[in-house]
Amino acid sequence: MDSRVCALAVSLSLFTVARADVVSAVKGLPRPDANMFVGTEAVSSNLVRSVFVVQVPGAGSNDWQTVGSGFFVRGTQTARAAVVGVTCQHVVAAAAKLNKVLYAGINTATGFHRSRCRVLYDDPGNDIAVLSPVHGPGENAEVENLPIPLDIFDDGSSLVEGKGVLIAGYPLSLGTEDDRNHPIIRFGMIAQNPGKNVFLIDGTASHGNSGSPVITLGSDEDRLAGMITSVVMDRITLFDEKGALTADLPYNAGLARAVRASLILDAVRQAEQKLSE
Image (tube, rainbow, N blue to C red):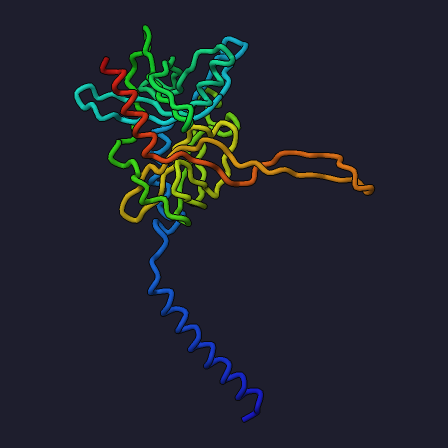
């Protein structure tokens, strides 16, 4: 037999053995939860019904400015069946700075509707605010949003680095064109969990995503891991041929900060106390 043929045969044999070892090793590893993208459409279909856009009136009669995102939560007071909205405290502060009334964009049986909100509780230190929609005359249409139940709030155990997450909200003021509620769904993963109040997500968030819920994907169940509060910014610096600085521009580094669900739960309970007063 030609020596080259023998060498090829030996190489193929070694490759087969090596491949078998690799396959055997892979089979012993846990599979990625929810196989990353497979099945996320089912989670998304519920998630888009939980979020709302936070807006303030603009200059015109039908002109609205998006200042953030939020999500509805069903409280613990079952007798009142209280439903509150959660967003970032800096979103509320931005509206106050503009001297504008906050509105939440909600889904109703008669279509998309903006409802005035009052602030029940805010926590500037953790950047959390809890809102209560205020229904006025003619605003009693049945709400079709799907509040997130407290029993899927994460206790920190799902904050595993590398775990897939979904983020829903209204980045760059997208999602309410033509008075239709159609939030943007983005995918990412837990990038860093330092065990503090805030964790990092490897996933692009933009202006308008403040207040977006972060859902961790699981093979058995999905959990509310936290809420987007800000993005991590980097800078691009440009120099001319003489080494002089010509531009220094910020850009999105592709990392987002999120506050933990346990702190959101504390804020919701504080807000409920005000509702019961």
